Image 1 (cartoon, rainbow, N blue to C red):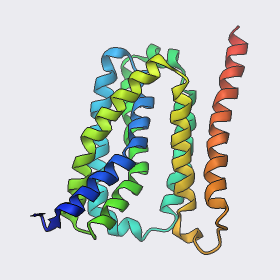
Image 2: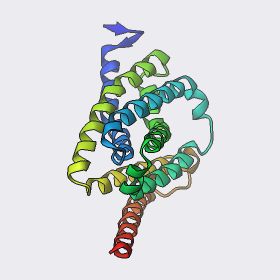
Image 3: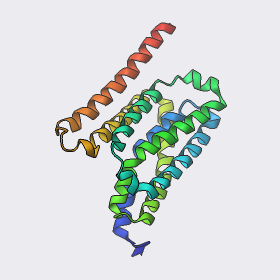
Image 4: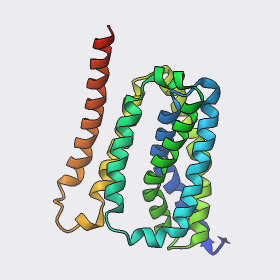
Amino acid sequence: MEIFGLSSAVLLEVILINIVLSGDNAVVIAMASRNVPKKQQKKAIFWGTFGAIILRLLFAIAIVYLLGLPYVTFVGGLLLVYIAIKLLLDDDEDYHREGGSSLISAVKTIIFADAIMSLDNVLAIAGAVEGNIAGIIIGVIVSIPLVVFGSHLILKAMEKYPLISYAGAGILAWTAGEMMVAEPKFEYFLPPDLHLLIPTSITVLVIGLGYLTKKIKTAKES
């Protein structure tokens, strides 16, 4: 059976790709929403996901052009490191005190981070469907319930166990490192050993920086 010129096997592959690659997107949505006032968390997830999906669809249309841009994945990785640190260090009290503005801040963070992280998702789907635009769009649409449902589960877990935020930041940092070493411009001179060392180092750096900063802040307040 074929849908929009795609076999059922290819569509299944697209779904599996989304299951594997949508996890980090769900993490960033949960982390950005965790400090928003309870009544606004669902709004943050909804509008953040809505904006992110629109950007994914734009990526689907512009994917050929994006592939031609140099250093896209490397710069995206650097930006994602910044986002991982920012999300880990965001202060709970500041968010609750800001009220309505925190909702806007969370939505902007979700859209920005998801736009960066969706490069691997869209590129993987584009490869699976061999550039079929309809197939890429189907893949993006399939990711919506996965990301929304996953972010709700992770958010609830973070509320019970705050330390999970460190794991979330670690996942984002690891994704950032993988994006940086995957930059095609580095393919010919980057030693294979660094493909593991760089993501590991960035992950340890982000988690360590977040832990030490919170320790210092707690010591000053006590």
